Image (tube, rainbow, N blue to C red; front, side, top):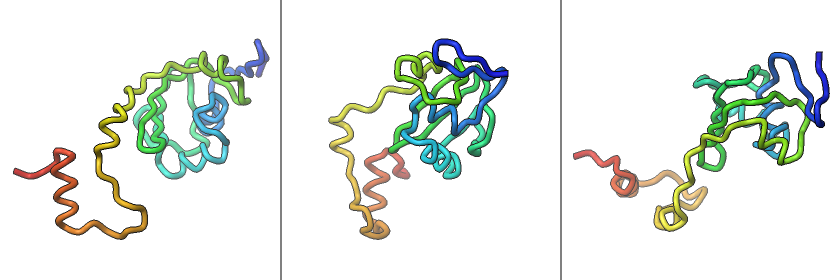
Length: 134
């Protein structure tokens, strides 16, 4: 049975992962949350999540958005989108800090649609990322 408390819709045991991530403002739309789940960008307790996978308080949700990973622990279950201050109370953010802008600016980027990297470009990229073979 659901009950309202300070504008929060509580559900006794579980909520859908796509609905919860949208409700706590980790995604702009519910369809974007569902698409991220279908694309394998959302993991619940280490396992890839489908949009309808249930989440419970204490679950760890990992979301990969724009190359960065968000790690949150579910505190409260909500199914309706709530304001930002209330949404902040619904999870504990354990995400690593983003890399400094200076480091991001020095990393090489390929133009989108420019095709596959050549062997030489791949080796240079691996060397810069510290994956070069000895």
